[in-house]
Image 1: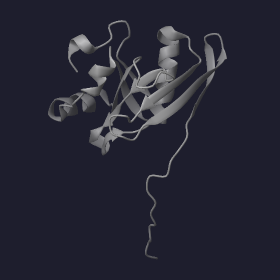
Image 2 (image 1 turned 180 degrees about the horizontal axis):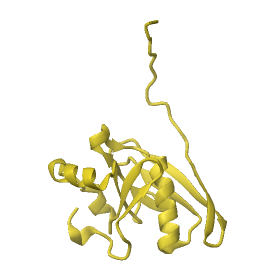
Image 3 (image 1 turned 30 degrees about the vertical axis):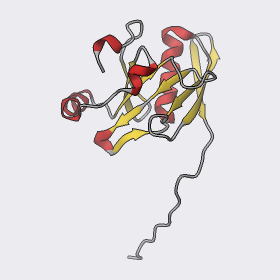
Length: 153
């Protein structure tokens, strides 16, 4: 990501929900679509920061009903790109609520670039700034099915 494509009005922030991610605000949908990771450059940085996933996001979306477009990259733990990351979506919902939007309901679209679109619904609950509940949901589609046979020891 080129520096001029990073949204200056929101900070880059590390978050964790048991799974650590780096939220990176991006100015435009075009800029987020063009992201290509430099793995050699990123590996030592992510290791030092103890971050599993890079989660760039923008307010520009493919579909007008959605609030946010995001991508989730965790190549160093075996996930080149995730089509839908609910755990990080919850953290992003709270981040946006705290930073500027005060929106209590958002829809995050993810997975569009990899032809596996997901819509993740995030709802912030609680009173005023004392948030005590974050709900995350979505619809699912069976992508593959398998059976695992284990030998008895």
